[in-house]
Image (cartoon, rainbow, N blue to C red; front, side, top):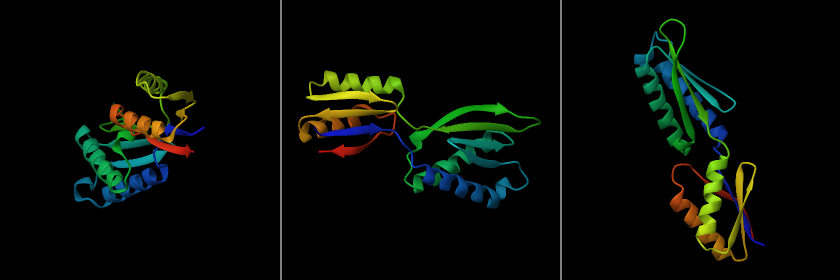
Length: 161
């Protein structure tokens, strides 16, 4: 029976490269000289450190540009709150989304059920597997999901015929 998986996975290698390029640019830019501006990545968390909120905004802007050039959707970034550190420094933690949250998975499942397409959606950990009798139904399901779920960068893989 034909099937495919709906997933939300960022290319972590490209994200890491984008963070490293951002760090390189911060080191060479004149407006960041003599400041504590820095960026680092651990697992799936990017940490921005700066002297003021304005500086964090500039670092975030550079990061978004670098990720866009590397074809990484910026909707993968889950912006955290700005936190005060010791002295006059501030930091912000950005989480890289990976996997479909249960609320979104239920929304996709409900969407497919209400669409009257002859497909079934099953939630499997952090992805949604869609199965159907015909390839055309699966392609219609993909189009429907792309159209209705726009706030999260979803992709489809593991298409089996």
